[in-house]
Image (tube, rainbow, N blue to C red; front, side, top):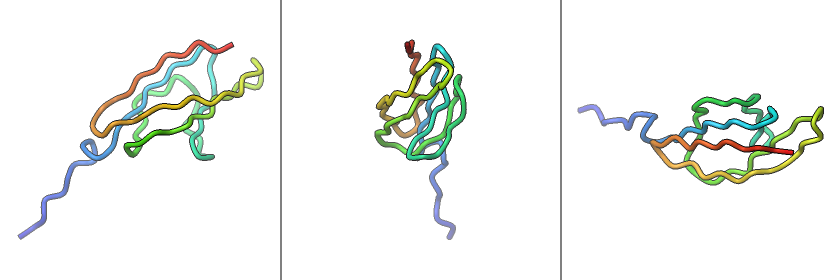
Amino acid sequence: VPTPVAPEAATRGFLTLVTSPWTTVSVDGRSLGETPLQRVSLAPGTYSLRLRNADADIDETYEVTIEAGETTTRRLGLR
């Protein structure tokens, strides 16, 4: 008898992030790409995102909590 496997969508959450101006986003040293980010898959938990844009002299951290099966959306104005 096969064991049921939970679908990935139920065990992971998603991050949608828009910043103004654009930033390069990383978490734990792993690049997630440049904003805007659309539904980036992450394990549930709290993350410190590093937001960088050398041209605009931005180097900030932003904490976000990801819930399983949900999309967390943030729009940030950075200066």
